[in-house]
Image (cartoon, rainbow, N blue to C red):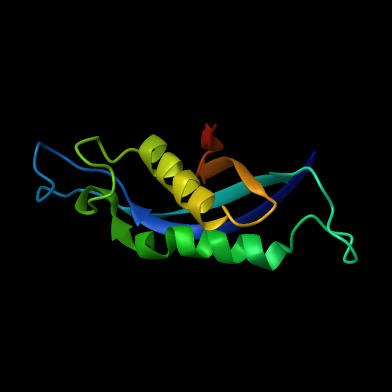
Length: 123
């Protein structure tokens, strides 16, 4: 199996105070989003599993509506808390849909935070 990884920066706000999302105390922060995908075969004649640009486009499409947003203000997670864990799962599921017609599948989404912290979603 081959693993291919792309990454991009994403700016979000994620902290809330109190029970209402109107009581906002969040700070905008940059996180790195990494999409790791796998393929079992190499296509001919290119000799590649997948173009990096395809994975970069998929990651961009999966996160485009999130850039600069406050997680609590987005209706992406239903009634679940807008956590980074939920965000990683959301990005993974979106990438999975975007890649369904290609010979590559997502393996994991990694959110890298300041101070060497990570949230990883894999299936």
